[in-house]
Length: 530
Ligand code: C2O
Ligand code: CU
Ligand code: CU
Image (cartoon, rainbow, N blue to C red; front, side):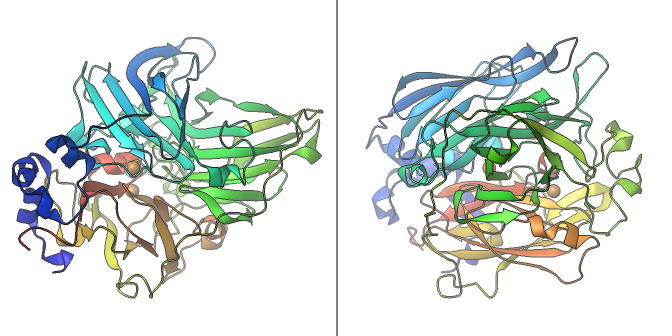
C-alpha cells in the first residue's frame, strides 16, 4: 500500500477526536509504538516529567524606544521543579524566556493564556507528540491552560517557540510572543565551550517593527511581503549594541521577524564562521562572506573578535534584490508601492541595507574559550541508496494566485484536509521538492522533522542570483529552507518517531495566516485493516 492511497476518509479516521474511539480498543494491533497520546488514553504509562515549567502569555509594557513605553505581549517563564532545564527571563523585554534544556529531558510545560484571545505555543523544530505540536486546532481560550508533556528527543540545537493560532500567528508574534528553546547535549558540549550553560552564547533574535508616534507597535502588514518594520530590533531592543571581550563567542542568530529576509555580514568584511544551523552543529564549520536568513531560520556563528580589541564591528544586513528580477526590483516596485512595503508604513524595503548589531570590543579578555575541532558527522546522508523516491521527489509548487492568494500545489489551508501527497510514512525516508513559481522568496518550514537540502536549482537564473546564492546554507539539518523565486529546492527527510497530523507552511507569518499552510499526516506503514 502506498501513502498515495490514503484519502480523506482515512485522514478523518486517523486524526483528531474521531481517532480516540477508533483506536481505543485496538491499539495492540497497530504495529507501532503507541504515541504519548495513545498511552495517556489507555493510561498505560504515566508521564513522569524531569522538570516542570510554566509559560504565561500576557500583556505588558516595556521600554523599547525613548519616551513612552510600548504595549506588548510576552511570555514569562518559570521553572517550577526539576532538573535538566534552566529558564532565563529577559526583564523589561517582550522577548523570552530562554529555555536551556538538556537533550533527553522529559518536560511538562503549563502554558497559561492570559491574553484576551485564543493562543497556543508551537515548539518550532522540536519533534514532539501530535498533541504538543501547538497547532491552530489546539489553541486554548483566554484564561485557559494547556499542558505539554514530552521528552526532548532532538539533538542539541537552537529551537524556539512562538504562537500558532488560526489566522492570528503573525500579529501575536509581532506583538512580541517568542522565546528560545536551546537544547544542548554532550556531543555539542565536546565541541562548543560552555554549551551546557550558554557561558559564551550571545543570542541574537532579529526582528523588525513599525511604531506609531506614541511608540506603540503598528501592525500594518503588506499583502505581498507580509509585515515589514522600519525599526530593526535585536533581542527586543532598538539600536542594539553588545559589549564583548576580545575573544571567541557563539552568536546564535534567529530570524524571528514575520517577513523580512536578512543578508548577514560583518562591517569589516571578516568572514562569518558558520558552526550550526536550524538543527544544530554542522559536520564542519563553513566560512561565508554573507549568510541569507529568512523568517524561522537560525544560524550559529563562532565570532572571534580577539583581534578587534578596543574596536567596533557591526553585524549588518547588506542590500539585495528579493525578487530575482521576476517583478522588477523589490524596492523599485516601487519604493512606495508593493515593493518594500513603503506604502504600508515601512520605509525600509525588503532587501535594503541597514545595521543590525553594533559590537563594541573591550580591551581585556577574562577567558579564552576555544572551539573544538572535531565536529559531529551527519549520522545519515540522504541519497538514492536510502531514499526510494530520490530521483522523483514529491513536488510542492509555491504560487501566488489572483488577489494575492498564496498556494501550495494550488491549495490553500483547510483545517480538516490532507491530500494524498501530504501523507507520509514514519521511518521511511522521502524526498520533497519545493518549486517556487511565485515572484518572491518563501522560507518553507515543516513541523516535527529535520531535513537535509539535497539540491538547489534555478532553470532560469534569477536576476542578482549571484548576490544571494552564496548565502544559502544547505548543509546540516534544517527545518526551514529558503526557496528563491525561480528555484527548485529538493530536500529529504525521515518523519518520526511521532505519528499523527502535523503541518508544513511558509514561515512568512502573514503568508501562513493567509493560506500558505497545509496539514501533513504521518502514519505507520502497518495500519489495522489495511
Ligand atoms: Cu515556526 Cu508552524 O512554525
Ligand atoms: Cu514549526
Ligand atoms: Cu511565503
